[in-house]
Every structure is written in structure tokens, then in C-alpha cells.
Image (cartoon, rainbow, N blue to C red; front, side, top):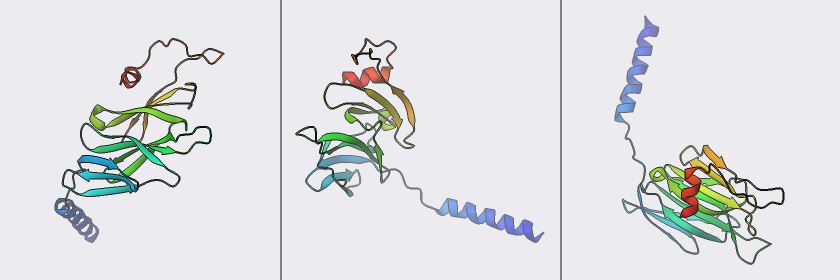
Length: 176
């Protein structure tokens, strides 16, 4: 009988804690700007979040707020020995006070967009010159899970072939 009473008390205590614990809604973002320090994000409540550059990072590019205002995304640019300009190596999505880093296959990310009001991202990667090894990914923002990928067909001389059955999310990304 004592064990039963103890279990009942523990269940009641957990229920009371759950009821009395505040539930925090996800932040909503209204602005994102870049300066020499890093990226400055302003929430709808007026709170400021500053995220500094990664070690070795030299710039930010393609900063965007998701359609639902729950995420901010950007490309992180790094020096590249083969070019006179920095290249985008990472796609970073800031949401719920957490930065999620997407690198795909490790090639440069030249296009990206939010999808499904901000719940997903799609991006395109390829070599810096020549458009070889083109690779697309569609990912869930929160879980970072790979939802789909697409690699266009090439012939044996590395020439891009006309593609069939291209996913609609790839077509949409390439047309923007």
C-alpha cells in the first residue's frame, strides 16, 4: 500500500509541475542585419541576438527570415585558395535559440530557400567553377533530417544531361 501511495504522489507532483511550468513560445524574428562583428537578429519582442562569425569565416550572404518568422538563415563564407573571393561553405539556420549548420556534401552552397513556411530548407551545391557535382538537399529545419536529395544525371564526359522527373522542390529552387 505504501508503494501505491508513493507512486500516486509522484504522478500528482509531475502533473502539478507540468501545469505550473510556463510554456515558452518559439521566438518570432523581425529583422536580421550583418556587420563586421556578426549577424544581429531582432525578435518581435525587441530582444537582440548577436551571433559572431565562425572561426575562419569572413562574411555572411543571403540572409533571410522564414515566411513564418520563426527562423533566420544565411550562408557562411570562407576563404578559398582557388579563388580571389570567399565561398559559401555552410548554410546556418537560427531557430528556437539554436544555430543549425547544414553542409551537405561539403561543396559550395550557391542557392537556398525556406519551404513550407520555414519548416524546411532546400539548397543547391556544386563546384566553384564549372557546375560539376551538382547536388540538392531538402531538410527539416528542426530535426535537421534529410527529407530528399537529388543529383542530376551526367554523361561519362561530365556533361550535364537533360533531366527527367526532377522533383518540384528542385525546380522551384532553381527558378528563384
